[in-house]
Image 1: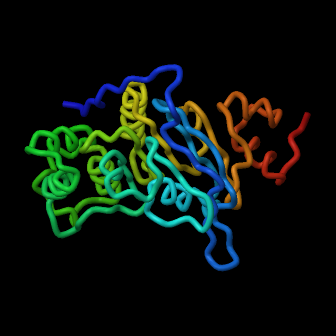
Image 2: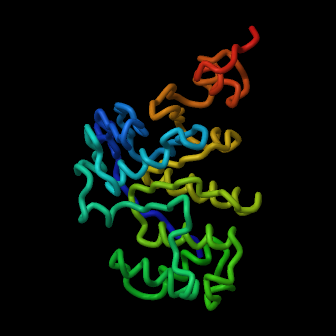
Length: 253
């Protein structure tokens, strides 16, 4: 049984689900996030694309309120972050697996559900079924493969059916078939009103997003649909478009 997103009402005048206003995060002389401002409308999948070290993970952590900004601020669902109460409305799948190796698969799912106030065993069972781990529910997490741990991390991020979901490279180590299943579920969640921000450096996932934000050196260097960004760069290839917009290559005309 797949998890179902909670229905959410959206009108033409809906406020943004996520806002960044002059966000800056510095680590000494390094500006990992450099004066980023944007509004993200609800019920869409946004892809944060860029090379490793471009600032994607730091930006997600700022939006989720998990690290304080050096300047500017972030809002999620109209609440300025960080906000402990607002975390109950946010799902976050980290780049590193945030699960407990000494617990079983089911115990991890129930634990994260309890942290979000989810009552009963059925939500955990549904989440594990979604990621194809129902048959490993009694397994100690330390015995799982890397891909299986990624699946469990996703289940734990989804268990409370959050209206905003941050996914930091969720398909790393996941086999192609399950990757398709993941993206099908992400689309179903967005269609039901969930706002999803997915970071990736894999360009072939970009066209599964409604809108792309290309990140480089802590800045948004381009934003738009895949088609719009290809047109802006004058190429049919998104990877070439990214390199061109970043100033690395010239696109043959």
